[in-house]
Image (cartoon, rainbow, N blue to C red; front, side, top):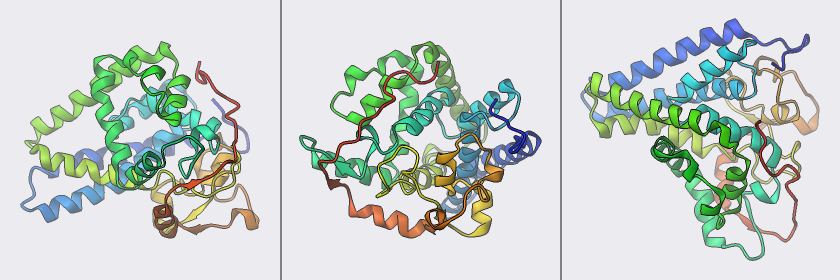
Length: 308
C-alpha cells in the first residue's frame, strides 16, 4: 500500500463514508419503485447521481490503493462500490491507472484530432462523453464482460486509437475476475429491481442520473491543458459542500502530480498560480467547443500492459 508517514490512509473514515454511500444508493434505487411521479424519480436520479459520484471518488481511492491500508479491504470495498457504477472494479482500475500513464498523449487527447483521423467521429466521441453516452457504453459492456471478457481485444478496436490503447493495456490474467464482477453487477441490479419492484424505465433513469453527471465531467479536468502526462490537468472550483462530497476529486492537478496521496490531503498539497482553480461549470461548457485539429504529436511512452 502507498501509505506514508506524511499522508496516512484514513481507512476507518473511508469505510464509514462507504457504508453511508452504499446505504443511500440502495435507498434511492428502492424508492424509485415507491414514488408516485416522474418528478420524484428525477429527484432520486439527482440524489443517486451525486452520491454515486462520491462513491466513484471513493472507489477511485481504491484504484490507487489509498482507500484502506489492508489490500483485501481496499479492493473489496472498491469492488462493492463499482457494482453500483455498474462496472467491474478490476477493469476500470486498469483503465484508470492507464489514464495516468497515457494522459494528454496522442493515445488520450480527446480534445484534438490528428492527420488522417475522422473529425466527425472525434466530435461524436467528445459530445457523447458530454451527454452521458460514455457511461452508457461502459454500463452496457457489463453484458459483454459477463459473457466473455476475452472478446474485448485490440483487434476489434483498431479504428479508434484511445480504445485500442486502453485494450492493449489490459492484463488477461484478470479476465475471470472481471467476468465475475460483471456478472455480479448484472445480477445485483436485476435482483434489486425484482426485490423492490422497480419498473425498468424508472430504475434506468435513476442510474442515468449518475451516468450523465459522471460522463459529462470526465474530461473537464483535462480539456485544453498542456500536453504533459503529469501537468495535463487542472483544479476546478465547485461549492465547498460539493468538494467534500466528491472527496476533493476536483483538485485534479494536485492528484495527477501525486496520485498516491489520499483524498483528505489534496487541498493543501500544492499552492501557487498554476494550481488556482477555475469554474467546473465553465469548464463543462468550454468542452462544447469540440475537438481541434493539430499536427503536434505526443507519444505515449507507457504502452502495453500496466497492471501486473
